[in-house]
Amino acid sequence: MIGLHVRKTLKGSGKNIELELSLDIKKGEFVTLYGESGAGKTSTLRLLSGLLTPDLGNITVDGSVWFDAEKQINLPSQTRKLGYVFQDYALFPHMSVRQNLEFALTKEQASTIVVELLEFMELLELQDRKPMSLSGGQKQRVALARALVQQPEILILDEPLSALDYAMRVKLQAYILRIHKKFKLTTILVSHDIGEIVRMSDRVVELQEGKVIKTAATADFFGLNKASAKFKFTGEIISIQKEDVVYVVGVLIGNELVKVIADLAEVRQLAIGDKVYVASKAFNPILQKI
Amino acid sequence: MDWNPLLLTFKLALVTTVILLLLAIPLAYWLSYSKARIKPVIETLVSMPLVLPPTVIGFYMLVAFSPTSAIGSWLLEWMGIKLLFSFSGLVVGSVVYSLPFMVHPVQAGLASLSPSLKEASYMMGKSKFTTLFKVLLPNIKPALLTGIVLTFAHTVGEFGVVLMIGGNMPGKTKVASIAIYDEVEALNYAAANSYSLILFAVTFSILLLVYLTNGGYLKRFLK
Image (cartoon, rainbow over all chains, first blue to last red):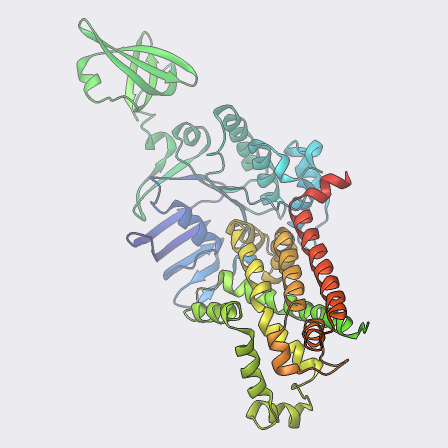
C-alpha cells in the first residue's frame, strides 16, 4: 500500500506549478495517472521514486516511511524498492542487453533471475546486442526486464509505449499485463491513450495543474458501465455527415472505419476528433462520448 | 642534439595529463550537475587560462611561489617543496594552464548524456560513485580521449608559463619549446629545426589518432 501525500512547488519555465498530491494505492493495483502534459504526472512518479524531493508531506509504502518532511526522513532513490521504466528507456548504450540486466543485480542476487527474465520477455536471442541496434519495441522489453531484475513490488511506467506504433503497443500492453500478474506487482502507469488505459488499468487518477481532480475505477471513469451492451469498441470520430434526416458518423476503430447513424441531439455533443465508444444494444448501436 | 628538452617536455605533459584527469573528472561532474550559486564563478575561473596570456599566469605564479611570499615560504618551510625553477613548479603551472582543456570536454560529455541514465542507475540502488564509473564515464569515452589528448598536446606546446616560473635550467626546466627559442637566439637554426620538426610530428600524430578514433575511421579500417 502506497500513501503519497505531498506538496511541491515546481519551477517551470513560464509559471510555477503547485503540486498538491494525495494518493493512496492498494497493493496489487494497476493505477494509471491521466491528464494533460504539464499536469504533474511524471513529477508524481519522480516524487515517489525519490528523484524529486517534496517540500512538505509524507510518503509511506507498506508501513515504512520513505519521506517525511516533519521528521526529516528522506530515503535516497537507491534504497526505494521500485522498478522504474523511463520514457526514453534509459538503456546503457555501452552494455549489451544481458549486461544491462546484470548491472541491475544486487550484490546478494544470483544471476539466474537475469536468464529467467530474458526468457520471459523473449529476449534470449537479443541478449548480446547493444541497445543501439534494437527496435523501439525491443528496447522497451529490455527496459521492462531490467526494471524487474531486483524483483521490486512496485513498477513505475512513465509513458512507456508512447514512442511505438499501434501494433507494437498492443503487443507490449500484453507483456506489461502479464508481468503485472506474474510478479504480483503494484503498477503505476502514466498514459494518454484511453484504449491503453481501458485495457490495462484498474483505476484511473486524473491530474490537472498538479492536483488530483478525479479518481475512479477505469470503467466508471470513462462511463463504460452506463450501457449494457452486446459489444463495445472505442474509436475516434473522423467525419460527421448529414444525410436527409439523420447523420452518419464515421468512427475509426483500430484501423477500420465504421459508419454509425446518429440523430441531431446526439451529433450536437460530438465533434470530429472526439474519442467515442461504440456499443450495440441488440439492434441499436449507441454512440457515447468518453 | 640534446634529447633532454624533448624528454622533459613529454614527461611534463604526461604527469600533467594524469594529474588533470584525476582532478577534472570530479570537477567536471560537479560543474555538469551542480545548481550551486557559485558555479558560474568556478566555470569562469576554469576557463580563464583560455583567454589569459600565459605570461600573466606565469607572472602571478612567480610571485606566489617566491620564497618571500606567504605561499612560497609556507610550502618551503612546512612541506619542503620549492616550486620556483623546479620540475614540480612546472607541473603545478601546467595543471593550471591546461585545466580547461581537460575539464571542458569531460563536462560537455557528461552534459550530453540523458539524465535518465544516471537516474536509472540510482533506481537500481547503485551509488553515485558506481554510476559515474560504470555508467557515465564509459559513455563519454570520446570526450575523455579528447580531453586527455588536448591536455597532452597543449602542455607540449606550453611556453610562457614555463619560461616565467621554470626559467631555463638544462635537464630541470628547459623544455623543448624553450630550447627552440634558445637555439634561435643563438642563431643555431638546424638544432631549432630538429626540435620543431619532432614536436610537429608528434603532436600531428597524436591529434590524427584522436580524430581517427572519435570519427570511427579506425574501427572501420581495422575490420
